[in-house]
Image (cartoon, rainbow over all chains, first blue to last red; front, side):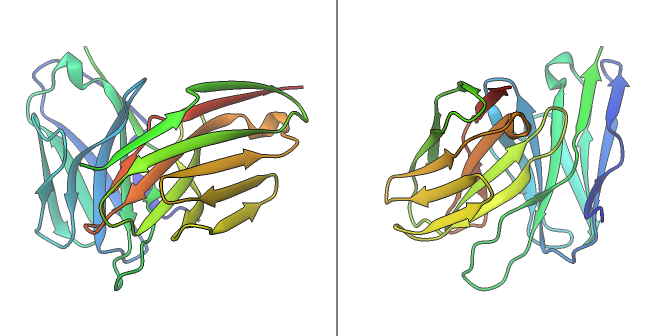
Length: 115
Length: 109
């Protein structure tokens, strides 16, 4: 019954490495999002996408990029990992139909540690 | 800019001791207010959506209410399994959710 799948639960990477976090949803949702979650700061939006090959910056895009080549897949890329990118990363998706507000379905998260 | 403030940051309850969590918000054009539950090391799990002032939703021991400026999540006779972090979020016209920092609830047996 898994609907939003993040490829890794835990990752440990070295400073300077290029890191790929993958997210796949099986609900045919148009919207996909990447957040990071840190104690005391809550969830902060990194990037989002409303359609294939479309991306928009969120509140904290610096040091990150994204790719959405297929509707069901949204990848977050850390171009050169740094220790301040150690965090819990959450992927989410949502539907987009008319004016109704639909909440997100979240993945289980990836806890990334950069050493 | 949308703002969501949750209080208190942490809440410790005895089993059976009812209480309320607050979520105050400022947003231009509210499309919906959402409550999520998050267990340690897991992603948030959807609880409720509220769309307009005066609306109420219930699920087991949880009841969410909405006014024009804030929402409350009431926990009635909580059990230890209700221990979690509860997140509030608002959605404006652009489909993005803005989250509060959450309230961590601990229920002791």
